[in-house]
Image 1: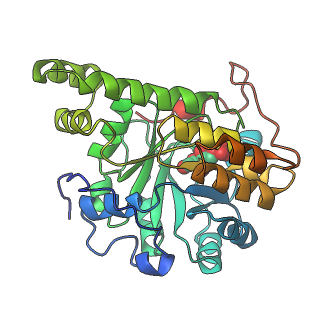
Image 2: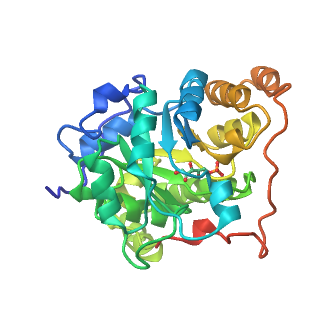
Image 3: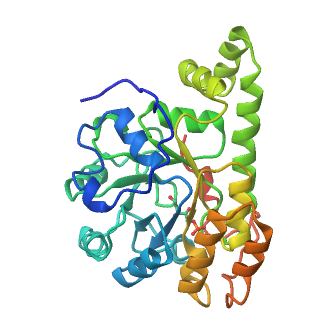
Length: 319
Ligand SMILES: O=C(CO)[C@H](O)[C@H](O)COP(=O)(O)O
């Protein structure tokens, strides 16, 4: 059932679907248009990493548009080391049963069998994630072969368009997960935006050369230049820890944010989760941002991103 990429027709602006609406694995047909259209419904939302049913309920009550079910948030993966794999399907099913919002789960880069397993248990979205230890040092998963939509990370436009050509229906800029430091998320979002701006004023001849330069499929680069944005939803991820960080990413042009370690490694996760949802909704309103930033308890302790970073740069994984 491999199908050529078709681009999503529009931005539906509809509320996020409940899990019961996407129970068949996120899509009844599995075409690229359906999968990327489903992801459009998450726009303007916050997707929260959760490691158990209780956290999933906290996330849903705080207004998360979806949750990412995993065994360890990226800060713990980084701290504990070892090979990080797909989570136990039993844990994922418990999280699925605890909430009505869509549930995502991660597979290792290139590990198409982990993806087959997640699709078989009816997960709503699969994240082929650099946060887990890569299973293949050359190939990403052929995501067209799945009904369930995939989200993938990217640091720049070329990487984003390569993932879309493999069938990713949803892109997240990578940032540096598990650091509580937003600097890489900003760098990646600014890179994607600047490269799109550059492409948007190019002639056809220049676009052919630029496609070669950034190792992107020409037809997707051309469509991106025409749209002046990625042809799929683009969230920010990796290191977002405060309401101000989340609003910063929105003002830089993201469609929504993923927050992992920053919530459940903070002093008051429920309050911070609600505040981050409010910050994404009102990202241009400094008065509301000030209100929701008050009295949130201790934030996650952030890490400096340098050569001594424990666990190394996860964002460098992927091709
Ligand atoms: O991989 C992810 C998104 O797919 C994580 O949810 C995200 O990167 C979390 O990072 P952090 O813990 O720094 O918020």
